[in-house]
Image (tube, rainbow, N blue to C red; front, side, top):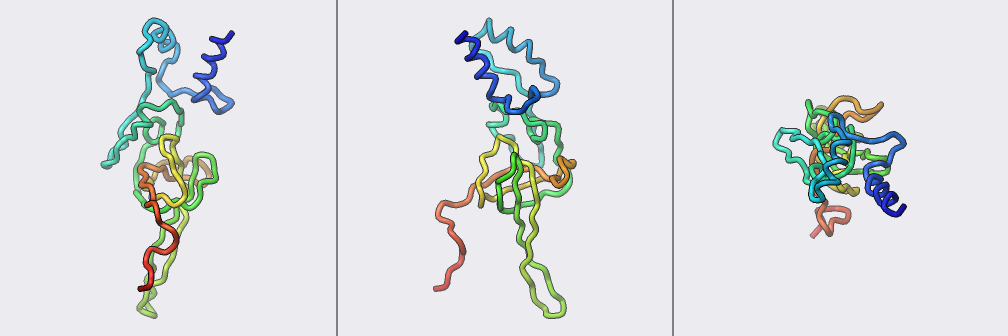
Length: 169
């Protein structure tokens, strides 16, 4: 009984949804047979390089998560725009809001005004993201009603960054 319970706990790592999660094109039954005979064998996992100069994270290659919307291990290709911004919120499940600040020119006054736009983006479990992190997102097919972008790179924010960057002297 204890052995059966331990096997279920190992499988529960990737199984967080009601439906059984598995990667397309990977036959799981063969892995179980090999694992019994050879203790050092690793599970079969499919991953890819998204291109455009972005490296595949090690957590995507070695991880146990299953995400069909992940650009590294799922059925999503990055094409179109590549945007950069700051993570504003991380309250949704595997989705973040990225804030992009930009300047808009007003011709009449010969000046610029500050503007921003919020873009929802899907986050693969291979990334550890906190609010304030600087992320690169790439355009992909529509993943939901509002999400059309996917996180492809993360740069953690600097340690002592609180509020304004430039101060009066």
